[in-house]
Amino acid sequence: VFEIELITWASKDDLFGDEGVVKTLVTEGSGWKSPKDGDEVLVSLKAIAADGTVIEERANVEYVVGSGALGSIGKACDKALAGMKKGEESELKCAKDYAYGEKHPEGATVTLTLGEIFETKDVSLMKDKTVMKKQVKEGEGWDTPKDTSKVKLSVEAATDGSAPIAGFKAGDLEFVAGNGEVCDALECAAAEMKKGEKAVLTVTDPAMAAEAKLGLGDVKAAKVVLTVTLEEFEKPKDTWSMSEDEKLEWGTSRKEMGSSLLKAGR
Image 1 (cartoon, rainbow, N blue to C red):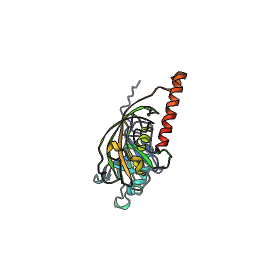
Image 2 (image 1 turned 30 degrees about the horizontal axis):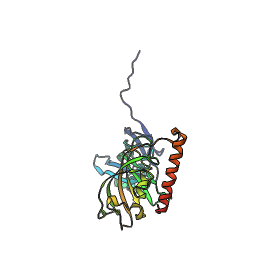
Image 3 (image 1 turned 90 degrees about the vertical axis):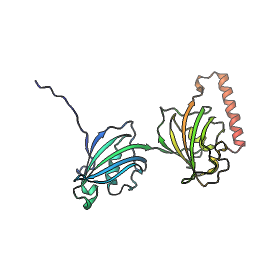
Image 4 (image 1 turned 120 degrees about the vertical axis):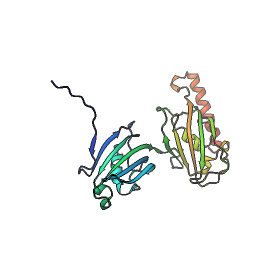
């Protein structure tokens, strides 16, 4: 009788089926999402030659999958990233044709870490890409603010895409979703965020980011980039749980609010 105990094991994957890139899992990631071509991610990598010398090292680089910005190792990294989860670290044993060619004919070993998957979404009212939200930190759960939710949103930065916007004042905004109490860009973004989520909003219609409470009432920039965090929100009472009188009162108040916002050009 033999007793066998599995001490450790390594998951290996021949990414292209020709042993040109063999991926070995070092640290498991979390969640269910993996990046695809066109997605923006935060990665770190270290490439080591066969003799142990470091060829290149990059830490916390924002990278668009499939863009070619990683150079000659981009094909191997793109293929690996397509099967990785947030927080995962993997080692890629690359032959020269998937690494640095004749500069390093013995190939290279690349340690690749996927730090974050940035989800970019059109949250504008008309879905015309005037307000684009890039998630830079995941929120909690699945719930997002609904119409009449009480919302607390932190706005920590405002730039024109490169330089800070003059007059901007960082701060927390507390408002009722759907009541037009904040600018359209923040209304649109909050409705698509989860508690604790941090995002970067790119607003190409500056009027939608004109928020006097933040010192942006008369913003002149051609583009406004806001860094925001949804600190918390309160869920309103669900309509299915309302009495008939409550439903009538709620419906009437929302109709009046909609008419008021329409007259104000919102």
